[in-house]
Image 1 (cartoon, rainbow, N blue to C red):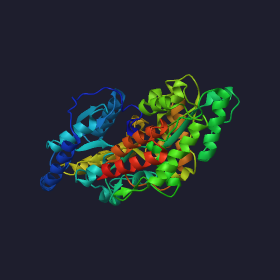
Image 2 (cartoon, one colour):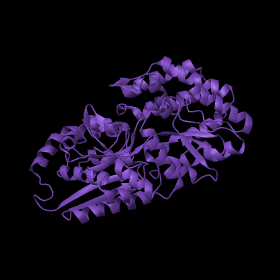
Image 3 (spheres, helix red, strand yellow):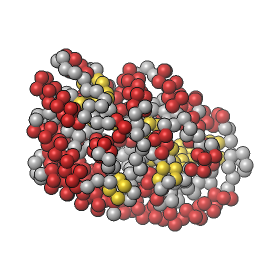
Image 4 (cartoon, one colour):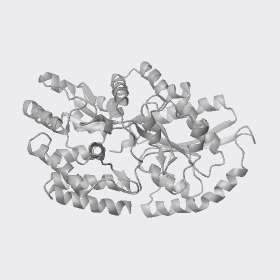
Length: 445
């Protein structure tokens, strides 16, 4: 499950043909862009912005489904209404193949001026001089992040410079089946429970209801990341890993103990939870009482069960969680209209009418004042619940971690592979941890 696709990004709708692209070609293409950037910037220096040399046509590229496309197009039309000299060339597609297409456009000399990106790729694109650094715009006030949670806008900083602006906020959420618990007279989980308390609670649920109390999240990088931060570690440290094989061993052993106690499903069902999309998470298929997701995925989960759901923070100190960008808006460094593109980002995140139009499709609005307004007008009970939980957690969020480094997607997939080896008993937790660490070091180069 891709973290930044929520809630509609995985819908198989789109208007662009996917171009298959290997990682080698992807990196080669980005390298070419890095070499070409000085020339592009030189051209941009001669180009005009809106109001200087006449009309501006800005190309915009994002992923998502039909609903997101309609909302985004409406918001961009509103910008044109307020700035008649600016029009848009709009392109969108489903998440599947989006980054292949973005790499193709970028390498082929036809990059979008403004594009959507997530934390799997932000550092990689910024490191290859593809994204425009936005720090000067922030400092001048042309890009206003003053109403954003501090850890939210900071999660777009790469090497000390702002490379992307959060299109919305998300955080980790432990979703549980409230109906199941109430029917059996069992307590609901609470924010602040320790990991050991959570596992003991899950064991109690399993014994009483015959439904495993919790999905085993040992393959889930979100849960591992939060747990690491609670140990004073992190997923990354500069250009290196922020953890050791011993840390991973302890994590895998924690969940082996939970499996041995019957608190989790069997390995085959755990694998099903690891491999499926948000609509078939174990908490809605009835195969576990809890699932480990992103908090703003509550509405999609609720659509797939008649049971009432609840959501709390992950176990342990909630200070380890942070206001995470569900996805970012970034500007191509060589854009001839970069000032206008930045102004569009500012509009999409800070204009009351635009934010009201976009709603919570890309996560909770980044601007806290406008988030409160959107919350008041929300009609979906699950979304109102999600907003309330994140608003409560906002008082407890810690500093944001650094944006993931190159190879993050591979690190995530290798964690799943290593965890499942331990879950199925193909290796010991220690052996799985050593294999994972070696694979991670190879992935990040």
